[in-house]
Image (tube, rainbow, N blue to C red; front, side, top):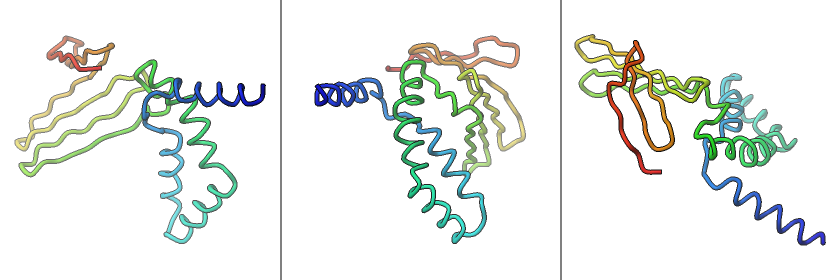
Length: 145
């Protein structure tokens, strides 16, 4: 009986976490640890969080079983809100994006000439839409699921 329960639990974990996921809880904790100060303090705190099971708890239970499963079924990780992306190319064009709590992304594009455009990206099933500031669809792309 005990073996059957363990086998079912393992199979359930594999089925329920069928995606790689963003591991938002672990990444936020690891990023926070990097802001504490110098490399010695960061290393000591990292060791402590590992030894006392904080990292394994965040990654194993919270991310793998709960948040990555939510992300798999809904397409959005609840802890990933506020994550940002920024890049500037060789010509001076810039793009900045922030993930919103509702799963959409706010994007601002700035050309090398200083022209700016703001868009919101929304995803529904296998379609991504780009909306202007008034909420009008300016582009739509079907993506493979």
